Image (cartoon, rainbow, N blue to C red; front, side, top):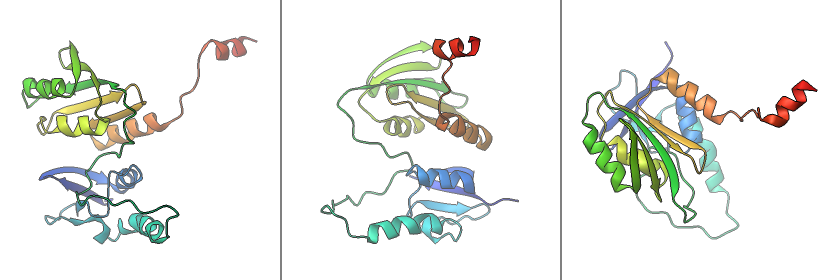
Length: 198
């Protein structure tokens, strides 16, 4: 059986995830060397860099940090890295989000209240909202996940930046969405249809 890992963030446990998913999280800056992980069957969490299969992911990053930078070093805060995509600085304009939830174990009112706290929002279907907010997609995801139960699911689309974030989908759906979202869009506009007819 293939190895799998769980990740502990703020007292909540996520996973299990395959090696491929863990590599994807690292590539997206969602998994840091100090992220707390445990292999399937382990009860004790430890930093990801201490895991023999995950350690190579962080060695290249450490080598890059060892090379002197041309620009002065920027001091980073001692706050731990959060499990979630790193986001560039906001451009000063609010982003437009579509949020879809499937609440099976929790009350929708807590989730909706949190959505309305994040910016101007409108519920357009029983468990779907549009939101205009200055917050990043990860900030929104992390805030809303706190309102979900173990079997509730969440999907968020940042329409302004062509990004998506989700929570609590199974490994197969997670991998499939990740592949589809990162695949280049195939153009099927009128110009391509005209070429086919010619």
